[in-house]
Image (tube, rainbow, N blue to C red; front, side, top):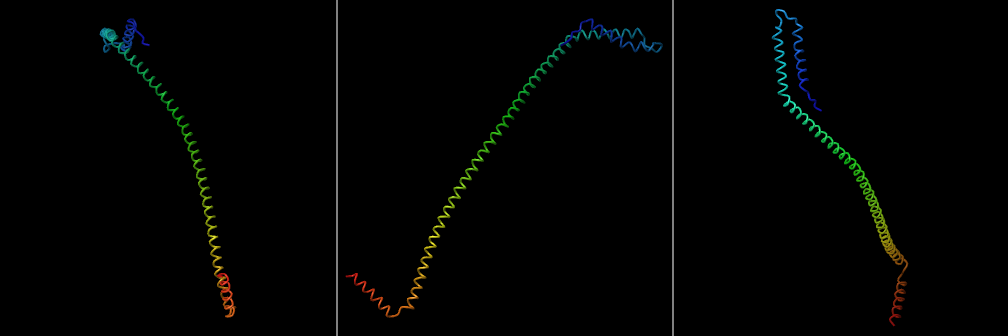
Length: 194
């Protein structure tokens, strides 16, 4: 709050200033080389009058300038306070966003974990299905190849048996046996034809 000085205070201040200025001169003692006292006192009075006039003339402009400066400072302080409050609000909003972002991050990570677990289960299920299919195909292929090998083995056994039987027959059958077999065969054919 600005303090108003009245005229008595201004005059008292001027007189005090004059006394302060005169104190060193009075302390020097005077003498031949000292200051002429009358001249010094006139100068101090002139200075006091000039200072009083300057204060009286400049009091209103200086007062309004100082008052304007005080008002400007108050406005600047109010603006700074408003900016500080705005900065606090923004800081609080940023803190809230950071907290929300941390919560969102946890939510997103939890969702990614769930998706990862679902994908893991899906991959396992697909792998099991594929393994079963491969196992089934392998079993089918084994059965087919085993059946084919058995048939091939039977054919080879039959061919070897026929070959061995033929060799044995060649060694044991003579011309009489052949004639008798042909005769028996022809008799059978004739019976069927009739």
